[in-house]
Amino acid sequence: MLITKADKFYPLPVDEVCFFYTLNEKVMAYTADGKVHPVDRTLDALGEQLDGDTFFRANRQFIIARKAIRDIDLWFGSRLSVNLQIPLPERIIISKTKTPVFKRWIAAEQ
Image (cartoon, rainbow, N blue to C red):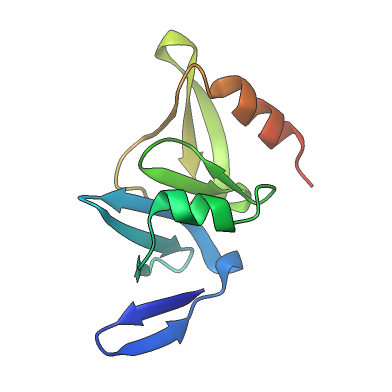
């Protein structure tokens, strides 16, 4: 994946990304070393390009990497709360309708 910063492009290996997060229509890639990289794509576009075995579209704000998941909490209303191994800008909630899909995805761990 190519990342743009100022007037330069630099490569960011997708396997280093723990999650993608969007806020105010800006998408950022967060890596395990704590760095944040601006991404010039929408989460919808990323969701189509990323490997579905490795990444999951958790909700409107997050795409998460399987390797970054620390644990999962039961949440109110049959939802799930996903905890990652790195700090998050906000809680990742899996909706009631996506919970069965997420459980199948996480159970199919490679």
